[in-house]
Image (cartoon, rainbow, N blue to C red; front, side, top):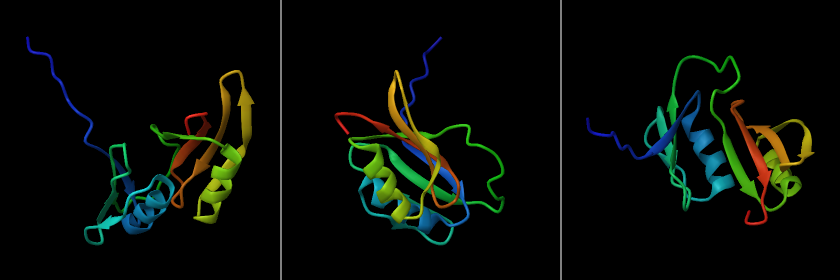
Length: 120
């Protein structure tokens, strides 16, 4: 039996406003937002898979089953920069035996984390 080998091409986020989220994530990750009409947008961050945004009629109702961890040099600075772009922190910055991290939400409430890494 052949082994299936798939390659991650992109991550797609269901949302209400694809253009807004593409602009937000491009500001955080780099790259340029590409708006392909009112129902689809994406950004190609350098060194990362494409992050795409697809308009859906449903509102976000529960916690994400998948979230992005973004490696940064300084969680506090990343948090402040993201808040200026429309993100919101969830709780306080956490420091434990694994390091320092901050749970955040993007402008539509999708969770992601900043994780402090010396390689940022």
